[in-house]
Image (tube, rainbow, N blue to C red):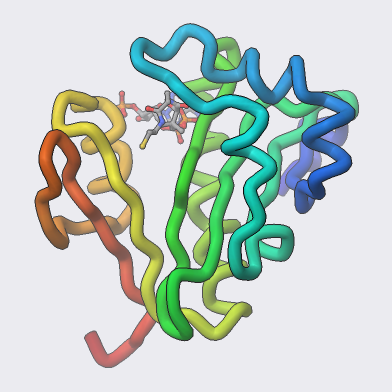
Length: 152
Ligand SMILES: CC(C)(COP(=O)(O)OP(=O)(O)OC[C@H]1O[C@@H](n2cnc3c(N)ncnc32)[C@H](O)[C@@H]1OP(=O)(O)O)[C@@H](O)C(=O)NCCC(=O)NCCS
């Protein structure tokens, strides 16, 4: 999958990666209005977080991340998903959704959920194209989910 760009790959993130590359991790979302994640949000410990979460690395620096944890036996939740502005709309997001689904399925989940601002039209379009559908509304957010259960 990465033949054309061997220096770009996915790798599980650890708390020590986040501490070492904290400036890079925090800078990835610095053009996003309303972005509020601090180092504490990255580092908070949650079930299976350090098995499920991964970053997109280029030349050993993070250029995107997907922070995930297990909400229940069946459900993995995507807490934060960002790609650096210079690397958006090149297909990496779509490949990261596949990686998330593979990781969630390997962890025994049948459902991957996320919350997106109702006003984030491009993200809503992106998720819908990548197999997510409406689950619920919560204030200014829409909750989306995709299922790995072949019977649904
Ligand atoms: C949402 C996000 C993670 C998606 O990642 P991405 O790498 O941009 O996603 P993709 O490239 O796979 O697809 C996104 C767009 O690029 C287009 N695209 C996909 N592959 C492409 C390629 N090889 N070349 C050009 N365009 C491409 C898609 O058609 C899509 O267009 P559209 O959504 O505007 O209609 C990323 O755009 C991002 O970080 N956005 C800002 C933060 C954000 O909104 N996060 C989600 C919060 S819930």
